[in-house]
Amino acid sequence: MPTHVALLRAVNLGPHNRVGMADLRGLAEALGFAEARTLLQSGNLVFRNARPTGAALEATLEREAAKRLGVDTAFFVRTAAEWQAIVAANPFREEARRDPGHLLLLCLKAEPLAGALDRLREAIRGREVVHIDGRQAYVVYPDGVGTSKLTIALLERKLGTAGTGRNWNTVLKLAGLVGT
Image 1 (spheres, rainbow, N blue to C red):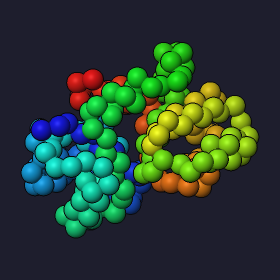
Image 2 (cartoon, rainbow, N blue to C red; image 1 turned 180 degrees about the vertical axis):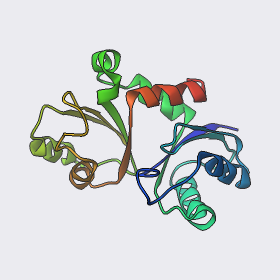
Image 3 (cartoon, helix red, strand yellow; image 1 turned 90 degrees about the vertical axis):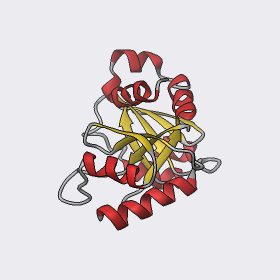
């Protein structure tokens, strides 16, 4: 059974979409997934699953999380092989080494349309740098994420697809969980 990484969007950030990690692991187990593990409290789930991956698996997780946990959120699923490729494709190796907390991986629901990256770069008002690789965006926030005008809402609007982000420290911890 292949290993998968599932990232939940916008959970445990306030009073809405609260989900305990034990409940998230329980959901995965109830769906028949094996070896369910979570990382941190921000909705990172690793599991083994024989079912197909991709949009169908994301839709199943979204539907079942809403039904069983009362959590209405998007899931972004990647296989262990895809996660390994994400880590290997990082175009910002020096930034990852020097300041991994200011490098974010944004997993996207769909690959952005042609010209989306150019539109996004035109909208950047700070020193942020963005690179797109398929359904992933790598974003360097040299002055910090919290004060940046390059918000998730702006990224999604310009790229034309939903996403969820994790800093490079978390990306590498998840890579360790999937054995990459």
